[in-house]
Image: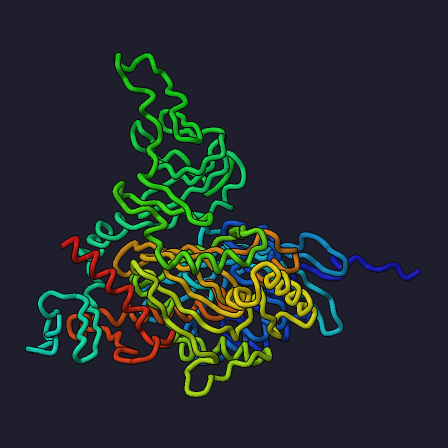
Length: 169
Length: 437
């Protein structure tokens, strides 16, 4: 009689928002090891190319396509003072809005949100702005809601003035 | 030429007006930093270099079907790179003959015609005029047939790499490419059919630095250990041996080469893995057999020696002035255009053999992102280094000379960690700029 529950029915938008805002706070404060703790052990992180936002990273050159192994290496790199693109670390401020639970894929909860990230660097009078939307796949685990996949899709036609995507979007 | 040590060399400016000073007696090679900051020099470069040299437009694989088009910027001009309905490849100025508006606004697509939204003039994909609304109002003798889109003066290709030249009198492309052809061949030989393709997904990003700094950076192996130590750590953590070779800065001893006409390359024994065809642990155990099979095909087709040349060396090739083909952890085709003395726009793609399986293509793209691109483990630090250099040039009057003398006077072949190949670029730059003045 144990019918599997609809995963979406087991989580509220408030819970999802709490997770996303907590994540944004950890990333803005460069608490990157704690951030890794929000992910499942098989998590992945994608930034599709600006000209092919809906593409598949196996056939299309992405800006970032990290499996968990490379993501852990990326965190090692970002914490290293020899990560020159991010030393001293950028000051970032993330505004996360329009959070919605949009569907269910197997045991995953699919979440959409919008982001505006302002990145400040020394000697740069104006912040570089990264505007776009997130698609998350979240998983309910014994340790709480975890991120299985995060996809940061930029709105701009090209990276252009954003330059390198050297910090985590 | 040899007198820069005479007089008060480091005053406000350069001796004798020279910007590139090669002193064979004292074994110094210096470039004046004015070349990185001066709007007048950039204007001269546009006329003497970008309007005279063969500049990259695109790859034939991007135009698979008749009517396929890509809008491009060639030496700053808007251009439609397209395959016409008869199958011919064209590069047409994307400029309406009537009042000059850009007629094709999309990044890419397939078209039956190009249509100007201003007054509705239309053009066929071969550039010929198709329709002019209200044609009857034009005076007698109006040359409608002569009102097609203007083709770039010269368009030629080598192994599907298309280049344009704005100078109708330029030497043909193959002559221009000189020794660079051999290094393009090494890239193309990865494909069993000799057909490579641009993979979907373009990386377009700005670097707040002078364009010539990316020429230097693309082929400069001296910077690898310091600028890219976090990438080396990533490789080491992944089980790749990146220990420097005895008496050398890098894991293998590679060379810097002059290919003639200002073209240059590095030529390094591989240590960092190659999708075609050298396995490293980053690819995973499951990829081993597949890489072996790719290698076997290479050997069968090309013979042991040539296969080893293709599979076991990395080459960062710079085709003067602004095209770089890095055949390293993966293959990247990138070119860059100055927007201002302190700003360039970079466009980069991945290139792969058309025959690749899904797994091979995924591996190639994964390998690309270990190092290259604005989200890779190395390129962002190159961008940082170039932008720091540009910031430093604010003091160009007081600290005017860049030193490019590594390897000068060496009786051995120039190493990739030397600067002999960088000097090749600068001599050609100086020659063309001198011809302008």
